[in-house]
Image (tube, rainbow, N blue to C red; front, side, top):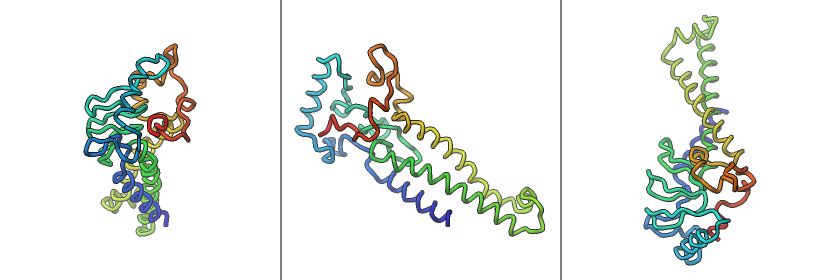
Length: 218
């Protein structure tokens, strides 16, 4: 039951991560995504950029020369997909998709499901080896007696370890309300610093429950 539940959980999260829009600012035709519904989108974004330049108290938004737009706060142009993504985290080869504000939840859900699924396969495998070989007194003897089947079950320990490490990292980022991109390149982002240059509390700066980029697109 646990293995079946974990399988459906993992597959469902994978499909939603791979098949969903991670938060593209532009659609495939190079226009502002209709989901964002800005008013006079191009002019509004460019005007906000000019306002930011005039007001030193505001964070200067970066001009995305490739897309020809002003990048909304916490967004980034992905070199792999060639598109700007809201709350860009990273491009995941495992998913063959960008991980951003719209599919980050499902990505973390996939990693969490992988932990439970891998652990359940390991437990199921060890139990199967012991039950199928009652003449052997230890699990190690069972492994030596049936190495190919043991390898099939125990190779899930690699997925288990990998998923635990990734989950640990992303749970930490969630607690700090940071993206992977921001954590790696935090020295490049002025909005993560105060007037003295010290890093600010990103949780208070960007409340987790607030809709991302709501001040940009409304």
